[in-house]
Image 1: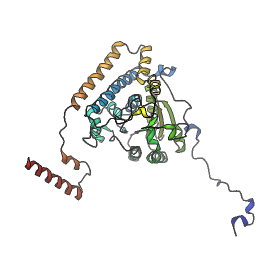
Image 2 (image 1 turned 120 degrees about the vertical axis):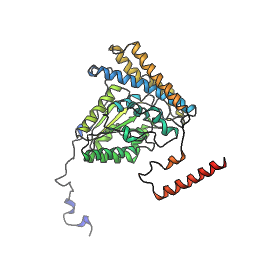
Image 3 (image 1 turned 180 degrees about the vertical axis):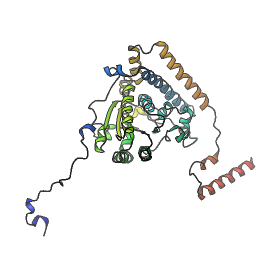
Image 4 (image 1 turned 45 degrees about the horizontal axis):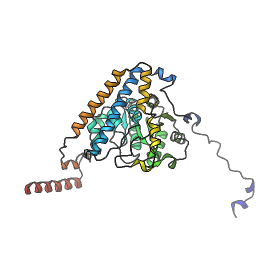
Length: 378
C-alpha cells in the first residue's frame, strides 16, 4: 500500500514543527543597497583630520610601492608580483583598522596591507622572490603568511579567532580575500563556522571586478557579495573600496563589534584592479582601456587628496612631503632588492615541524652529503 492509499492521506498537509523559527532576523544583516561613502559627503567632516592625513600618506607610499615592485619583476628581481594599484584604500584601511594585538590574514595580493601594518617591505616580497615560503615571523608581526591558494587563509583566520576567544584573549582576526576567492569552498566553510561559533573575525572581500580574467557576473548572480552574509547569519556591509575613509570606518566598526563579542562581519569593498592580475597576465584580452580609464577617475588617492585640499588639511608642501617619503622608500627597496640574497639549501628543512621527522632528517643528511661532495669537486 502506498502512502497515497493510506486512509486520510489526501488530507495530509505537512508543515514545519511548531518549534521551527528563524534563527535570526535577516533584515538587520542585509547590506545597504548602495556602497557606503564618506569622502565628498557630510560624514567626512566628522573624520579625524590626522587619520585622513595618515591614510593619504600611506596611499601615496602604497602606490609607489606597487610601481617599484612591478618594476622589480621586469628587472628579474621578483619572480611575480600581483599589484594592488587602484585597491590601496582597502589595503591601507585594513592595516590601520587593527590593534597591535590583532591578526591580519592576507592573500598574495595583500603585500601592501602587510607593509602598512609595519612589515619590512623586503620581507613582504620574500615569498614572491622565491627565497622562502615567507620572509617574516608571523607570530612576531601578527601577520599570517601571504596566502597563494585562494581563500585557504579564511578558515585559518576563523580558527585563530575562535581559539583566542576560548582562551579569553582580546584578539580579532581580519581576513582579506578577492572576489575570486568567494567562489572557493573555503570561503563558505569559513563563514559558516565563524557565524556558528560567533568568532571575532572580519572578512574583507576586495571586489576588484575580475578573478584573473573571469568577471564577477560569471561567478555569482547574488545582488552583491555582501548579500552572501545573510545566508550564514552575519551582517554584510557594502562599501566604496576606493574611499579610504569609508573603508576604514566600516572595518573599524566591524573590528570593534567582533571584539565586543558581536561575532563576524562580511564586508565587500567595491574597487578595481588597475594593473593586470600579475606581470604574467595580459589584461587587454578580457577588458577594454575605456573601462580602466573610468576607474582611474575614481582613484583612491585623488579622492582623498581632493577632500584634504578642499578642507585645508593639506597643502602643496604636504603633498610633496608624502611623495618624497614614498620615493625614499622606493629607492631603499630598490637598493636592497638589487643585492643578491645568500641562501642556504639546508633551510629547506627548517620550520617544517617543531621537531624534524625521521624522513626529514634522512633527506637533510642526503642533501648535506651531496653538497659536501659537490664542494670537494670544485
